[in-house]
Amino acid sequence: MVVTQPGDLHEEHEHEHVHLPQHRHHFETEEQQREAASFGMWLFLLTEIMFFGGLFMAYLLYRNWYNPAFVAASHTLSIKLGALNTAILITSGFCMAMAVWAAETRKRKALVNFLGLTNFFGIAFLVVKYFEYAEKWHDSHIPGLKFSIADFGKLGVDMAQKTQVYYSLYFAMTGMHALHMIIGIVLIFWYMVRANRGEFTEGYVAPIENFGLYWHFVDIVWIFLFPLLYLIDLGAK
Amino acid sequence: MSDLHHDPANITNPEHHEHHIVGPSTYLVIYGTLLALTAITVAAAFVEMGALNPIVAVLIAVIKATVVILWFMHMKYQSKLLKLTIGAGVFTFLVLIAMTLSDYMSRAWGLW
Image 1 (tube, rainbow over the protein chains, first blue to last red):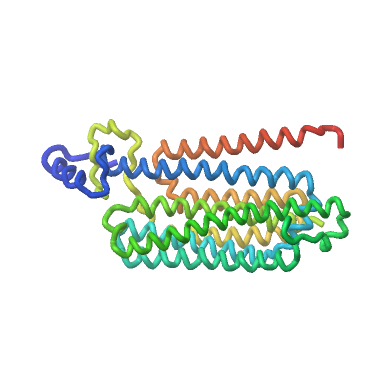
Image 2 (spheres, rainbow over the protein chains, first blue to last red):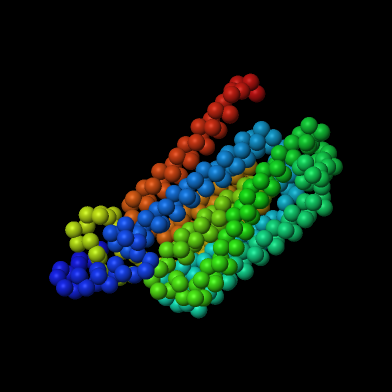
């Protein structure tokens, strides 16, 4: 914390800051406003943790109940595509972090470019996801729409039917994650237009910073989905 | 983004932290760490460890998430208010998971 100089210097400084266009009158200081914004964003993310948490809870429970079905069904996922997507999403997260840095250091061009890269990798993730979903469609592994237990004959009919629980959760969880990404991608396009106008490189970085929190949160959801859906049953027979 | 503090008495926001800008070199290190951890978790999945496999996978995921939260999401540089709030939220979430699981898993205790 920096000790403020009393007297004229301080007064002048405060005066200058109070008139920044983004500073709302009900906040004492710009920093306070910024922390309030970040606090609000984090509260929203906590509700998101609880929301995805319900799905993770369902996954844990059914995985215990129908373990053979979950093992067999998770073996049909492609680890290569899953790992590729993890790397793509981490790259996208890195670009987002760099975008926040560019906004903070007032580099307009860099901000637009990093937002563009974030979006590029976000879309690449969805393209890979599309191929994974297409494969599930082709193999008739889509509960309620196109489902056959032909691949799971050795489980016995009852347990083989339970693979539908796995695929339901797979589509619910990855689908909800993809929906969050689609929302993020649309927002990034909007932020790119505004960043290009120079809106976030004059000291008003809260929207970029908070969007960064959202994007990283979506990364974190995938960081858990990848091992749970793709990896943990690899060694099990 | 001034480096001068506006609230000399420090009344309005005692937890106030100066804004800390995390730079590209830190982000690159974090990026490399996350990629390395991804490679490790994939490799670990191919090693047969029985009941340890899920534990190792989830443990690595927790480490990755923590790294993302601390550096990409700047939690390391935030105020105590924010740290405590997030900590409390995550703790509540873990309590909910643990209580629900302990209920379901103990319902048929001894019957199997």
